[in-house]
Length: 288
Image (cartoon, rainbow, N blue to C red):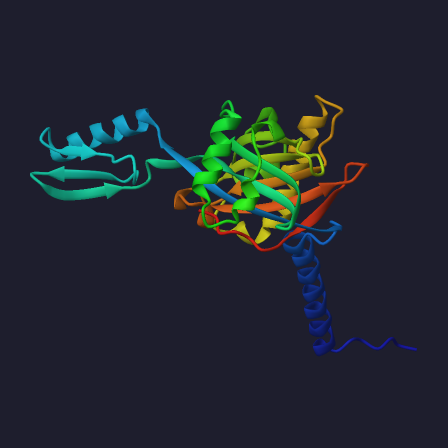
């Protein structure tokens, strides 16, 4: 008996179904990152960014403007805006905002409600490796910077916490092709240890700069997990003391110069076997 051949329409239907299935699987894996268990726990945060201008880059820009407009050109860079302004005979010839860059992230993660905050994780972490500022500076800076956030969030003193084990991240974080695709520039990871009267704990906070925008923002969950796993592996290779939580702060749009537009954030609780369980964000205070 001769086998019946599939009609052309059936073949097309099977191909479409296969493509749809692969698309669903890819979306779940790369966008939803659905293989990560839920921590069934909420966390809140607020954060801002610090900015700087490299003197060498500014000097190079200034020399370029003199070559372009002549020795009479006047180039200024107000510290409050970070926007370079080029004037000739009083007229603005051009401006440049590319000299300003994000050089650090500061803020706080919290567990618990405002009526019962169990754990606080204040931090100030460099976007490129640098020594952490003093706790006193961070604590005072947080209280002054986030006046729109509930002030109960900052009801602690310098003896309640410490910033520990700050480590420079490799340029590609050891992620190989993934790190290359994300155009990772490295960053810094620090452990915040909460020692207050409420529930003690520790959190690994990684701040990483990536230049893969604009295509990579939809894949925040998956790439943040890869960054966190790499940072956690680097930390635990040097110490057996694994933190209770981890947070990924990815500066994936560094050219936009603001926390709200430039940062993506994810957070996890860490199981005893080292597995990451994703935490949910609730009642977010506006990032600056």
